[in-house]
Image 1 (tube, helix red, strand yellow):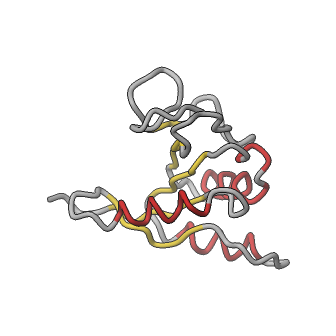
Image 2: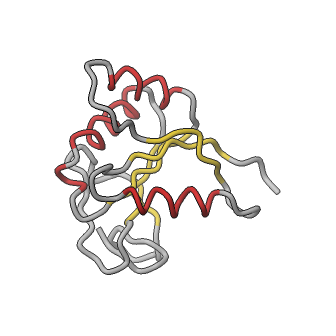
Length: 129
């Protein structure tokens, strides 16, 4: 098996903590291509962006979980900008299979997505951004 890639998970703490927990569970599978090093910071502090930057610097890739409110998630948008600043690749992952997933406002039209092969951003479970 290939070496697993260390990743940071960016997600909306207020609405998508359940999706983070599910992704962490998937990462524990033997056939997972990645392992979770860290994730978004919940505590509000004046230096949270510095802490997020330090966490993102430690990984090879960032996974951005998109849910129904991700477009208004300030932290997710800041983490995307940090990933770009640090030249860390990231991709968008639609979290909700029932649809309504929102693309973060900091995401670019050219950003990579993971999913079911549809031209829209999608998950293997059929959710679309």
